[in-house]
Length: 312
Length: 325
Image 1 (cartoon, one colour):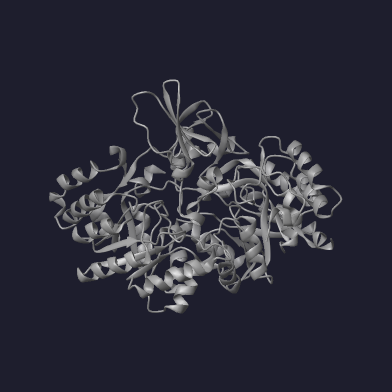
Image 2 (cartoon, rainbow over the protein chains, first blue to last red; image 1 turned 135 degrees about the vertical axis):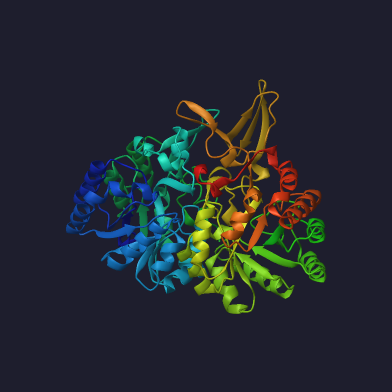
């Protein structure tokens, strides 16, 4: 199946607040070793964090581009302040790179400029995808919540655009004006002292019965379970999906990228790959429930036959 | 300022009209409606009759088609829009771009309001929807302060409607998959949040445990009133502490800020609560209407009466006040 080999991998933006050097070195290693085709960088969750990576941004871009990766600049997921919108406007004016829209304001600012759509924009159907494409969207990463039946329908209706699916990472589930992360440490957003830096893979939220449930990442809430579509890549490729997004967690993302590439290249069997992924990211269980139109936290074991899994 | 009132049933609709609502908002009994709760909402015929009654009393009707169209099933939403337009709806409240594009093209004379579920939280986003779809009003997300609203009002080319009373979303509306993570059912896709079909209560020792899907959302010791397990209003363990991680079980009440909202340029005040009974709707609407018609110094007793009607009796001004963040 040569279609599998025509696929590409996108490394998503680091959603968490990592120490600046860690963030830089992470991307240097991605540039040197990871089989990803493009890398989205830049603060996406909280505008207060933006200054942390700025000293290293130019070096990271250069290193990634020297390694042949396409660099895409991320924008904020929730824009409420003037300065946040202004920053996107300035990026759109001066940047030589593609920008990724994660909020309606970026969609407005990027109109008629080539750009990509991140997984935080609500694209639930083909008419919406068509509208975004007509305004300059080149690639659309569909929301993690979307079931396969919808993915298949959208891609079939509109094959001329490159659709991407969120294939690895804790699922971004919600964003708020309020910072639950700061609140959990006795602060509020305006005097947060960047306490989210203490939790580079999110701060676990457990139920009162000690079930692992969610994780806090500043104003964002992510799932405890880690989405993995390793076992569904072949179905997705068959449906026409050409790009897969890997969302950075605090683990060996080079190995995670290699594993996904190997499954797409059909050099590693999907079941073996899933077992390997559980070792690479042992911090959380894997989930693929959204893909199967079930609760997002669920894990559905792989079915080999497309027909068996998705009767017409 | 206009008063926009909820109706989950034809009976509540009548009460809201009689109590002095300037407009009533409601939706069909299907997945096009972000309040797609069992036993609620309107058939085609009920909507037609309700709109006719509203028109006879000089009240407007806004029809919410504010979920996101399911891929391949867009006709359900298109049909909803066609029927709402034909029934004489004064405005359609929409969240999905694809649906907005359809309505703007097919029914250019129809007033289009941007649902809070669209998450248009800044002037660029709002003006985009005005330019692209001729949106005439935006319902602002409950993530903004009054100062933010005033600033937005100066920079947009449409009217602003804000929530002032009732349930409160902690998360940016239309951008939350917490419910579907636990239950497979979401506001965006199914029009439900923390659906009753997935709620279970069980006794554990002296405590009452509320669950949503597989997950415990709260535990209530004997004597403590048990609330509904809305996911973001649950109690959770974080590090060494436990408590309401996202928000206490409170409801929104910013009626004390009417003058500031008016000064900010707000055109319409919205009451949440399409799941509420007709008696509640009648009482809240008439009290709020009286408050709006009174000079500020005479409002206090009316606002106190309103407060006593709030969920759990505890209220918050939410994001409208900066320290909430």
